[in-house]
Structure formats: C-alpha cells, structure tokens
Length: 139
Length: 139
DNA sequence: CCGTATCCCTAATGATACTG
DNA sequence: CAGTATCATTAGGGATACGG
Image (cartoon, rainbow over all chains, first blue to last red; front, side, top):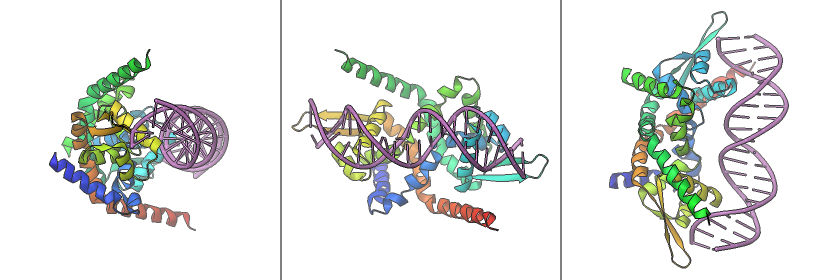
C-alpha cells in the first residue's frame, strides 16, 4: 500500500512535473497504443504463435479487414510485431511477436489474467451501480 | 516461452470458443474500460491517495470537467473507485480506490512500469518504422 | 464546489469494392 | 491471399454555460 502509493506518486510525477511531460507521458505514448479496440486481442493471439493474415482474421472473426491491417501495422510500428512476407504465389504474410513484444506482453498478461479472474466481480459491480442508479431515479 | 503460449491459448480459447464468447470476453468487458484516454491516468493518481474532484482536475490539468466526471463515474460503476460525498457547504466529494480497484491496479502496474522503462525503445521503433516507410516511398 | 446539459467537431470503426 | 481506397456512421471528446 505504501509501495503502491510511492510507485504511483513517482509515475504521476513524471507526468505532471512539466508541461511537455503531458506529451511524453509513458501512459499516453506507450500504453495507449496497447489499449486500442483490437490491440490486446491480437497480441494475445500472436503470443500463442505466429499467424498469417488470413488466420488472424478467422481467429478474431468480428474484426474488419481494415482494422486488422491497421492494428497490425500500429503494433509493428511500435516494435511489438514482426511482419514477414513470403514471396509465394499468391504471397503469404506472417506476423509474430518481437522480443520487445513478448517483453511487453508479459507485463500486460498480469492485467489480462486479473480480468479473466474478475469478470464476474466487475459485472456484479456494474449491476449494483445500475440498480442503485435506477432506484434513485425512481420516484 | 511455452508458459506464455499456453496461457495465451487458454485466454483466446475463452474468447473464440463460442459466439457469445465474443461479448463475454474479459478483454473487452473489463480491460477495455481501463484503457480509456484518462482511466489509467486517474487510477494512477488515486493509487497515491484519495483526492477531491477539484484536486484531480488540477493534477490532470488537461482533462475537461466533462471527461473527469464521466471517467470517474465509469470507474466507479466497474467497482474500482469509491465516491464519498461530504455534506459540507459547498459540498465536497472524495474519490478513492476500492479494494477491487487496488487489486486491479496492482496488475495494471506491471504494464505501466514496462511503459516507463521502455518509452525510449518504443519511440526508437517508431522512428525506424517511419524512416523505412519514407525510404520505400521515395523514388 | 461539483456536476449536468448542450452543441459541435474530430477521430475511430465498419462496409464495401477494388488491386498486386 | 494480403492489402488499399472510399464512403458513411458513430463514438469520443472538448468548450461552454447553467444548476444544486
């Protein structure tokens, strides 16, 4: 608790110390890009093993081709994903995590596991909140 | 390395097994709400200690009042934040992390720290990517 | 002081069609 | 098979003014 507080204080210090800190904040610069609608999901899939473009599409059935391309590109740009083109006919492209991607994913894991183990609790909290809200809105 | 793959496979299994899995996926249901533009930042601040509404505004100077209210409300709804109203005149409101919030934040921490320690590497990766792109676009 | 309501604008996403 | 381009839609977010 004091460890957490100290750690938190240190991080927000970076953020709020100087005006440019707002732009250089790791949370905004780094974390934000992992928090896109599809990023975490794709990282999870790629953490299992490398996959081809079409395979990823099938594994994440509700992503559009547009967002798949774009998200992979963003992840590649930040250095998490490696893109390898095989000059077959027709060409195939394989995506895999880089060392940096694996390193980052290991840190992200903790949160993913927490989520897995606490979906029910979060849903319950929402339920309570919504019920209380409905109650206070009633006459 | 196989631990990661196994863990990842298990998680995406949950996600892709059944159609309703798409909606019940912890990543979407839980993690997504921590990944909003301001959520992680506010959690960091509140992890240090409880704060009043106005204090939070000052600590995160570039958030609008609207988004501060809304983000706090969302975090409260999911059970991470407790909202306590003190009937002073004028009223003051204190926000603090709940036990669940602290538990979740501990898991999020890992990622935040990774980001802190790797901002430079991520920026470097982006630079390389953009340079390579510019190169291939040139004649 | 805290929160809400409104208006408005931009960025994010999806659907669809087309190319190497 | 992978990827791009275009269009249309929506959700996210900022500014401002008002209310308890």
